[in-house]
Image (cartoon, rainbow, N blue to C red; front, side):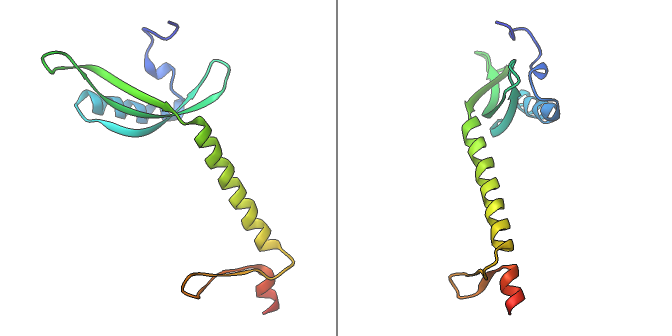
Length: 122
C-alpha cells in the first residue's frame, strides 16, 4: 500500500535507474527482458537482489497498457557468490605467499600454476 501510486524509480537504487528505465521502455515497445538483476534497498536499509523478467502488459485488444515484472529473490545466491569469490581470492593469496613450492598441471600436462616459492627455488 505504501508504494502504490509512486513512481517505480523512487524505489530503485540510483546507480540502476538508467538501466531500469531502459528495460521499462523496451517493454513499452513490446520487447521482453529476461533475467535482469535488480538491486533494491529496503526501508530497514537492507539490500535485496531480484532476478526479474519484464514484459508488456496488454489489454483485450492487444494494445500495450503497461509493464509487468515477475521477480525472484536471489539475495542469498548473490551473497553466496560474493563469499565464494572472496574465498577464491584468499586461496589465491595463500598459494602465492606460501613458504612451500606449489604448482599445478592441467589435464594436458601443462603447468598452469606456479607460486612465488616455486619460482624462487627453480
